[in-house]
Length: 329
Image 1 (tube, rainbow, N blue to C red):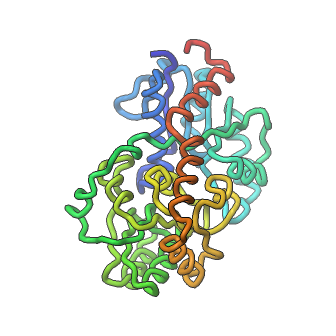
Image 2 (tube, rainbow, N blue to C red; image 1 turned 90 degrees about the vertical axis):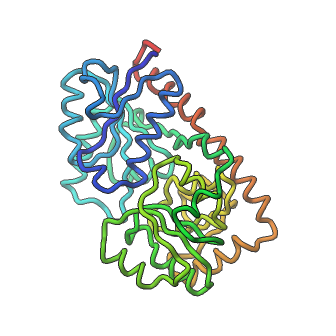
């Protein structure tokens, strides 16, 4: 074992589990598989002095104390900002984040689009910022047990949407599109906004089912993806890891068009012209009936795997750790 890295995030991150929090777990896994000791901060982690560096997820204000202690103990700090603003942050928030990231050796972004978006609002040293893939587990390449999902949910021939049920993820408009098409759906995820969740449940037809959060990379999650007709995330912000995982499982993907989406998937997915149900409907129809469907799915798999496989991302992360001055690998 060589580098010893402590992975941290802000104190309220796991109050509602979502993609950003599960990402921390999966980065720890891929680093450990590459001969790096990567521990997640908690009762089983060691004192900070044991580690060579800290990898912190988020620029949330609740993480300030961890970042401050990391710097005070002379440990190198790597930050995944993991932020996407729909509206410009206020000046006080900009100043706080700029001070936060100034203490980092490197800022790690999962796409050039995310980096450009961050730089629109936050001034940082360009030499600190690097782009690294998302690190999707090779477990998604294994055959899935399609008999597993029916043990917890009686749904078939469905469109799958993974992620917290909240307005920014736009499940309500997807549900309205599924209602119009009379296609079954499976919405997987907890919720922050209970009223929005209840509205989704009220409007969903009887063939649309809801499941709570499913553990990342689990056999149940892989069963849900493998059994789906389509993976859809027509959100206001860029789609999450679920679309990358869907690409690994060679599923057709439906999402709203955008720079992030084009960077990752090019023309190999089916784009809705807007976040509204009338525009989601034809994208779903095309994903199910496009004559070039199989070719697009295969191209998408090749493109996404080349950039986001766990082995590729682990090698990139280790290279950036070395470039930042860690020397005992």
